[in-house]
Image (cartoon, rainbow, N blue to C red):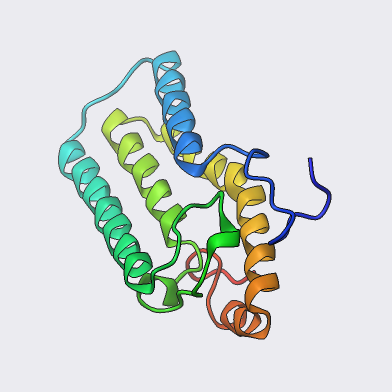
Length: 163
């Protein structure tokens, strides 16, 4: 493993990609729900689950479009290929809108499962992604310097939370 994970020292094999984390945690949600009596139906379950899932899909689409328009990479394993610091659209509200979409997927899955215990998947995802986010932040700071520092000062990492 590398000591300081930055733009030039980033090891793409150090950590699993975020979609893998989301999938593994979703499986964990399912197992946890099965161990506590199985999925449960409630009024509005389908509407809530589908609404959260569609919100995640819309956010993924918007962010993908922003990266395409900026002609930069969306690959979290390749920060060395970033050519543009995207700060508009969803990125003006959160520095990690893709990871928010991942959390929305887990929220949708939890809603579908119908057991509040499944919501534990969301903080598990945040914890699992923290090393990835720190590595990306280090790489972006090395690449964009003061421009990135100014962005960090005005836009929260998640939503409404600075730091």
